[in-house]
Image 1 (cartoon, rainbow, N blue to C red):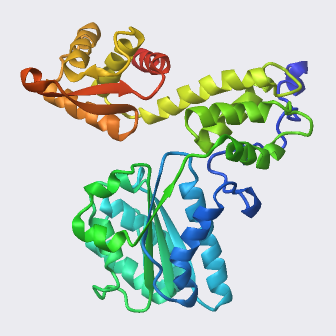
Image 2 (cartoon, rainbow, N blue to C red; image 1 turned 90 degrees about the vertical axis):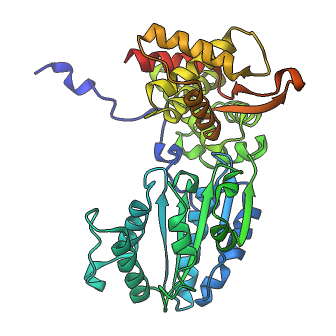
Image 3 (cartoon, rainbow, N blue to C red; image 1 turned 180 degrees about the vertical axis):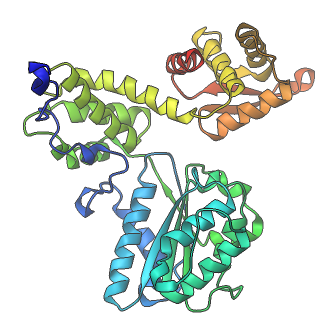
Length: 401
C-alpha cells in the first residue's frame, strides 16, 4: 500500500463550509427567500381558505427560469400545511415535476403515491401496471380517506403531453369524484404564452388566479447570494465577488439559479487553483462554465437533427452575416450542409421549421414574423438567445462524444 494514501483526499474543505446551500434543489429556510415578499403574500392569499378546510383558489404562476416560482410555491404550501394543522385541518401538498412525469398516467401515479400511506389506507399505488382511470379512482379514495385539503403543485406544467390531468384535478369536486377533501392546483410555467394552448374548459377552472414572477434585479440577486454566503468558510469570499456575480447575472438574465451556480462554480475554481479566497476574476470563468452547463442541460436528450438545426443557427450567428436573425431558408441551407458533413440525410424544410418552433418554445431561440410586401410575402426570422460560441462548443462536443 502506498505511504501517500492518507494524502490522496482532502479531509477539510478550505473553501466550503456547507456547500448544500448552493445546490439548486436546496429549499432555503424562511429567512433565505429574498426579494419575493409580494409574490409569497399573493400566493398565500390565494390558498388561504384551505386553512379553514375550504377550497383554495387554483393558481397559475408564470415567470422565466430562476425567478423563484417553485421555491415560493413549495414554501407557501408547507406553511399552509403547518398552519392548517394548528387549526385542526388535515392538509398536505403533492409536488409533480412535469418535465419528468409528462404523461397523465405518470403524473396521477406520482400524486397518488406521494399522498398515500398504504398502512393507513390499505390502498396500493404501484409504479406501473394500472390503467389511468384506476390510478384516479385510487387517488380519489386516498384523498377522501386521509385529508381535508390537498394542494397539488404541477411544476413545468407546459411539459405535460395534454390537459387531461388538469381537467380531472380542477373539476374533481364539482364532478363528485371527491366528497370530503378540497383540492387546489398550483400550475407553474416558464412560458408566459402557455395559457393560450390550454383547453378553454381547463382555462376557466384552472386560472382563477394568475401571478407573474419578474426576473430578479442586481440588489435582489446580491441579497440572495449574501443569504447563502455561509456556504463558504469565514473570510473566504472577497468583498467584490458577490456584487460582481450579482451584476453579471442581473444584466444577462435575472436568474437566481444561474447566479447561485456562478457563485458555486467560482468556489470550485478557487478550490482547483489552490486559492485561499474566492476572487472576483473567478466569477467570469464561473459564468462561462454556468452558461455551458445550462445549455448542455437544455439540449440533453435532443435528437441529432435538432442539434444540427441549432448548429446551423450558431454558425450563421458567428459569421456576423446579420444581427437581427436569419430566415428559415438560410438556416435550412446551412443545416443541409451540416447534414452532409455528418453523413446524414437531411429532413424536409417543413420538419426543420417544426424543430425551430420547438427550440423557440424552450427559449433557446427567438422567432419573429416579417412582411416582405407583395413581392416576398411574409417570412420568419430566427435568432439564438444563447451565446453562439457556447452553443457551437457544446454541440460539437455532443457530436464528438
